Length: 135
Image (tube, rainbow, N blue to C red):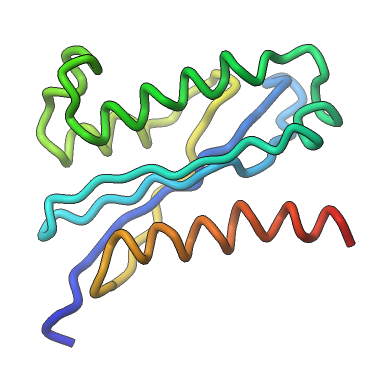
């Protein structure tokens, strides 16, 4: 138990038509204060995107999410937000938005390895939806 640290995460959702409030999960952002870690993992299913909104540009959406990766890494090209403290970068990314890319409420847990936890949550909440859609 002593090796475990707290973490917070939010699910990243794609809301193609905000007024309809329909969404599907496309990623996860995870933060651990003690490990000074913030990471994001995402994947937009082309098939789901076409089913929900065929007029959205997948390349533009991926470019937008790539900026989230840069912010998580604290990359100078991420601008001012990328230079924030790790906790502030997470809070900024996980903040409520009314755009087509939104975050769920944050959830908490304990983990020994935040990166492995990010991968596990991603598989459970993003990739499993792709598998479920095929059944």
